[in-house]
Image 1 (cartoon, rainbow, N blue to C red):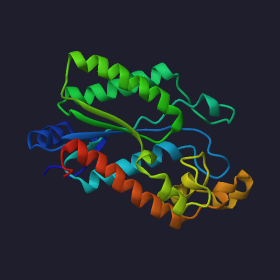
Image 2 (cartoon, rainbow, N blue to C red):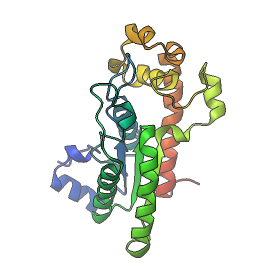
Image 3 (tube, helix red, strand yellow):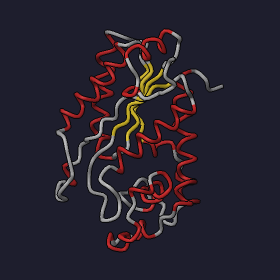
Image 4 (cartoon, rainbow, N blue to C red):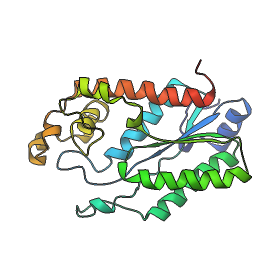
Length: 233
């Protein structure tokens, strides 16, 4: 029996091969993020855990069109290395891994790839990935649709102003990230430690705000994938 999973790492080679032969997994999402300090109240994995979970929810909603590749957890986080436990990579190393992950998907016939980012520090590296990719595929594969979006890119600032007390996006372990985590990944939030973070935004965070934010994020990320798949009218 073929697996109904959409997570690449959970599939066998037969299951992936048969899914592709059946016309499934036309698009792929590669989640990127970071393992870094998030003040006193959020877990180190906040960035990558959030982008990965969003990717999984969207892929599940669009099953069987989308496969979620193995997340690229370590990001460009030198600016957080003052906090013990943070992991970082050099920009060039990060660029190479992301580029090669995308290239792997394309070589397996998946020409629509969304890199869904959850860490602001990766954005400069992502621009380099896009430039390098455009140069490479201008010669090799003109039919590839590669997009890089941080998951908060789909949100409108006017919407943020309606939901949040402090209209900051994304911030760092502030109202936005803390609210989303409270709803999506509550096990990663140390509520009792929020006052110790001495951050006005995190003090204003609630799970209710997180649900409003996440619902809008999921709609927006799904719309990006649907546009890549030609499903948007």
